[in-house]
Amino acid sequence: MQLASPLNVREFINSRPLSRNQWWLVILCFLIVAVDGMDVAIMGFIAPSILAEWHISRPAFGIVMGAAPIGLALGALFAGSSSDWFGRRKVLLFSVLGFGVCTLLTAFARDTTEMALLRLLTGLGMGAAMPNATTLLSEYVPERRRAFLVAIMFTGFNLGSAMVGFAAAALIPAFGWKSVLVMGGVLPLVLLPMLFFWLPESARFMVARGYAAEQIGKVLSKVSQTPLAGVTQYASGEAPTGERQPINVLFQEGFRLRTVTLWLTYFMGLLVIYLTTSWLPTMMKDAGMSVDRAANVTAMFQLGGTVGALLVGWLMGRLDPNRVIAGAYLLGAVALVVMGLNGLLSASIVMLVVAVGFCLSGAQTGLNGFAPGCYPTVARATGVSWMLGIGRLGSILGSSIGGVLLSQGWGFEGIFTLLAIPAVLAGLAILLNRRSL
Image (cartoon, rainbow, N blue to C red; front, side, top):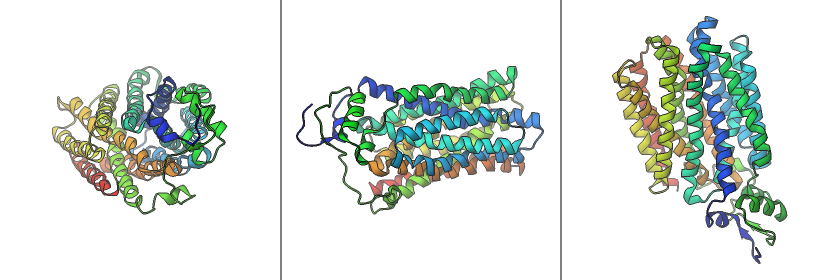
């Protein structure tokens, strides 16, 4: 390809069909998010067995349940946003290595203090992986298909979270809860060599950071499977922000409102999702269900979320994304109230868990696909990672207060009816985000 003017990377990617290597990138990011989802959700499924074996109370175990979300927040805020300086690929490789090793070591923790520390370190790696996988994929796919393809990637998170539930149901009776953590640690480490050899750096990041044209062309031509040897200049296709510090872009005029509303929406959504997935198995066990039955029912939340994510992502490419995401959150609030009023042992509990996961996890995944397009390349990873990091405070709150509410006598009906409030607030916040676009 011979060009007299700089090649606009954004227009180049938007104008072409997806190559085989771009689809391979979708698969790699899917696998990163899948093992991330497994290790995020893993404690909720093994908690009942640990409580029984170690003879500790739910509030005492709350420190363990809340440790990973704290690590996720810190990992997103610092390690996640560092990729706007050091690159998406490097941060992703280190993050997968980190949470794989730490999950494996958690199987050998001797008490809640050691386990909480290891879950905190695990969270640091997981917190960096999610925003960078999202950012990298969004920078290599056409914008018209971005929401749906990112949604496909995020189904890996839901499927990974569901798989660990089914694995826990099979492994715990036979080998104990430690075997689930060993599995959760080994799988990311098995994935790591594939990422090292096949995961590319973002061409748009390389342009924004002033890499040599030869380096950019080598990476972009491989991913797009198009010869670019004759191209001597590349352009990002984005208006300059006037800021060298990525974090400052988030609060510039034009970005300030969208930043705050994205944070609020993500916070509320994760509060609901983490309280549900972290404590629903324990509530079911207390109601008389077996551990394996409780794990299987909770895993249906993630399966519902997988289907919901695909539908929300598909609709976002055809309708107003803000309204699609808001509608899913508001329907999720209705489903939460209905589930709470029906009770844990109702015949429809599985269907209702699927419905809640379909709406709320679908909305949350849609938000992950929507956020990268809200920021320019120089601050994209920072914008996405800070949304995840600030939003993770909601997951910390949700993971921690579940045990407190239960110990204070709150029942299933009261907790899940109460959770409808943050779901509604999430829907209203993303509707307000429309004013910033």
